[in-house]
Length: 302
Image (cartoon, rainbow, N blue to C red; front, side, top):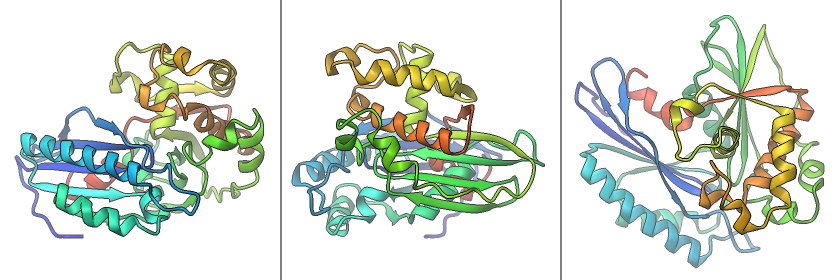
């Protein structure tokens, strides 16, 4: 990672190159903490790969078009620190490096391919999980290509792992039946080595925030209402039952469900219920802050 001197007035742009969407966090450092703009999102579905695991030509074109628009957003904001974080779709693809070479031409910045463990760790660091500094917390991040779980306290992360289960990856399997994703994933999860009094399971990432937005029936996305929102296991199951048997057109009318997520919200929610059943979780607390804020925190206050 390049070394940056961050001072009052510094502006940063961090881009998450995810499997379903590219997201951008823009923030200005006020000398104490980051003052962030609402995150921006481009649906690219980069994780819809060939059967051989390679990124498709169409997905790469969508990604590069998004990066062109992201570059314009970074320029307009005046971001001097620019970082791109690539996750499972790119790190697992044989032509992921080829895509990043093209990306550097379209949107020049420092690109880094995160390992699954890094993705889990920064997600934990970014989430607001330290309401009680003596407690231990776990973060669950169901992404497009993978799911990350991390465990730690206010001082350190001592368990971080990525699993090959994501909303895009499991989309085809989900259509085979209402139990297929659950059956495939429920045996994946490791026993969590919780090393002290436990606080909460924190849901981060697009699946968790989308479920919260739908439960809140949001006309327009409001991160302030998402942050700290509690989702019960039964509520998620009830939403799943409704969503599974809706047509795509009907899902597009659901308040709080973004158009770019209508095709993958069911498998994403099924992964969450699999985790909740495995760990006997009655409810999760949703955090709008995630790995983008975790990465940003390296450069100064929160």
